[in-house]
Length: 262
Image 1 (tube, rainbow, N blue to C red):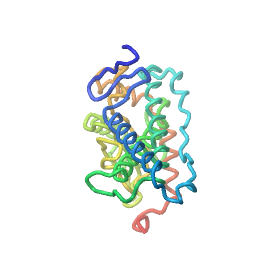
Image 2 (image 1 turned 180 degrees about the vertical axis):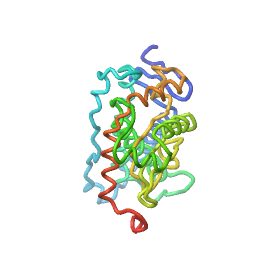
Image 3 (image 1 turned 45 degrees about the horizontal axis):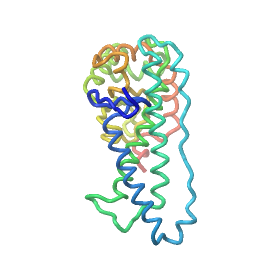
């Protein structure tokens, strides 16, 4: 592939700098168009307050580079490395949109199209893309097997056994196009599961993510092509239950039940 060529495979694009989904390409185009609009506005009659706007990036990418050299069973460094680049791209776009929203033109606000509408929509895509990837990478690198303690008790109560839960998780992974989120529902005080086709589609509220599974093609296609089932087995073998335990423990610090939606 030459420097100017991009190769489309399924629902994602291979570039020299890594794997980019078609949805990501559309998002980058929308943000670029909005940037041009904002720059053009700034070149004209900019509001007096614009000069006082301070540009600051609120997000910093976490370091998951140890996963590249960890020699995980079934998940190669060649698979993880471009995935991390994709994650860092979401961090960059989340910061870019955050700052563009400070100076975006409000006078053209419109529900069909406007720079403000596009930024607000794509901010949820970029920020959720960043956060869900952090949960995903954060629960990788373990030794799989069965959980213990409160995690096992919670899964047994909800699914009957850890084995039944893993069967459910893999089936859910085959059913969705983007993510499977297993979390603690602070409103209902129970383990809950959600499927997302995109980062900002059907994202649950009042749910503390405990285990996040990425099923976008970019998560497995280098190692497994289109064989998602093999990837799901590899994910299970490398699941870090200790990370899940820490997340469940964090729910104890939150308000639960009816008071969680004050």
